[in-house]
Length: 205
Image 1: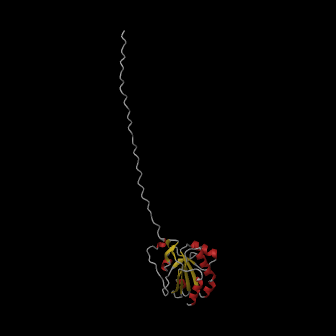
Image 2: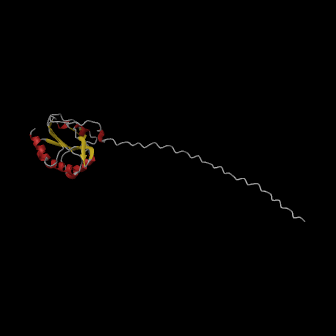
């Protein structure tokens, strides 16, 4: 018997299951608003203001400023007295401490001439309290935090130190007579011998 020919059935090619690539719709993250690079405001809002230069014979600018106890002091309340208004950069720093202590130690001589001493910086009331207590200062310290008083007396100026330029208080003192007139103005004060120079100026009033 003839062998039966095996008829090989061609199996139909398997259909490749094409997987549809499902692309998930990713929600686009909302665009972040660009960060605002806000430049810090100049202290006390003094930017763009012209520096005032007071001279001998000018009427001393009036003011109302909180002292180291939080009470408001004004120039007007010292009418009829001599006033030494001195500006210094910062509480409890070497030069400012020496200057304050020199005024403290000379207070008997100053008071004998019916003189009021007022120290001014942009430090806070709390800072002034600590500074005054630490060194036993016997005169008021004015907290010109917003810088209005510094601006009025022209002591907020451009300064240079170690190659850096910045705005700050130039150490200055104004001697004001009983009528509110400036009789002596010291600028760029050197601490050593300064109180003696102030006392000499007071003798002429």
